[in-house]
Length: 198
Picture (cartoon, one colour):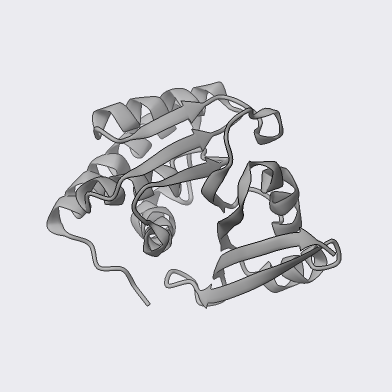
């Protein structure tokens, strides 16, 4: 199921695309091969998580890198007047400088933290997202301390997602909703909740 974007949302996301391409020449936000597929492969992929945006929630995006999905989701939340408190975390200070610049340029409600997620000190989040960060089991282990008991993980996973879920279930029990990605049917959008140790 695709997500419809307004003219205003597309305009801001195109501005973001230009920022990514401009900064990539200096700090390699996306690979050379992916630059020509930035809109489809990165931006529209990130848009899929916008279905999880809800009013008055705290959202932690880990391994934010070039702003996927964090900045993309913040753009959509802004245009839909959904009050979400976003925190974007990445250990690379140069990428955090980009995330800060992009969020200011697009007038987004975003806080950027240049830290490793395991060193992060913050209140628990309602929702946590990650894209191409690490395996499902590792994400659960790293983000567990930062997720509310009734919170949700929203992950954009590659073609090995089934194997990753299988391995994660050896250590954790959780509820799972998997939706085929609109950008690659072999990949999946995962919603993980009710996480507890196996």
